[in-house]
Length: 324
Ligand code: UT7
Image (cartoon, rainbow, N blue to C red; front, top):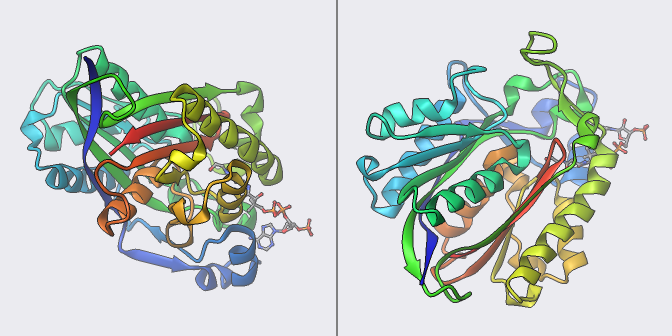
């Protein structure tokens, strides 16, 4: 017997305001054609004034709890993955805890940028398997619109705001791959690539929030290699091949990265969940947003084998294999 971290409910939230490529093309030197061709993005959601990362996180978490039939009073751990917290501190997770959980329940943020959700899921899985949590929320929530340089066409067209969440519970499994729950997680980082993708500000350096800066081409090149590696690592650890997967739920940065990763791994494109066209890159929120889209429309069903993978600033990258 072994303890498994089972995903019981999935939820997400997108701010009401949709910004199309055409709207951006009216503000910066870009075109709908360029954005669509190079990234697959058609539109993104942008948070309203006064709508914070914590608001998005709470809305997504409430939906995940409802979907899982779990009451907030049952929670004993809350982890929020975000690179755009409400404040430098305290953690955005504390606001979620105050709203949804009993007083005293531990909560903290994880900062691994676009890989944040995979890092958070791996962390919570370790808490669960160590017997330190039974019912937990894992949330990815971002308001990247607040850290974009809206005059920089090379970055401002790429990102969007949103949040996604899963509620997980500890369940006894047999220890085999037929168990429901997280089967394995795989995390990596390479800080030598710090300057490839960063926000050029922070409390300790400039005392400003800063803006996203990216060497897009180099990041793209690393992404295709690292993501394929992370997928292969998860498959090898579970003695599986890509044919065994029901779904690949990748971080949504660029349609071309999704396509070339799938092609490199021999995964049928029909098994890849794609939301980048509607959500753009929502960093830590993109995997749970995509997961929720495919669970809600009935594509992902209980028992399906789902591989999640992401890569982001740091660089950080990783994967998580779960049976729903
Ligand atoms: O989530 C974390 C991981 N992030 C990623 O994985 C992002 C990875 N990178 C990418 O997705 C792509 O590299 C981008 C979408 C960022 C850029 O696409 P690209 O095909 O690599 O284009 P590029 O940067 O090589 O730029 C090609 C041309 C340049 O013009 P010149 O130098 O050829 O004259 C750019 O100045 O496109 C120009 N350009 C634009 N043109 C119109 C760059 N951004 C834009 C724009 N509109 N928004």
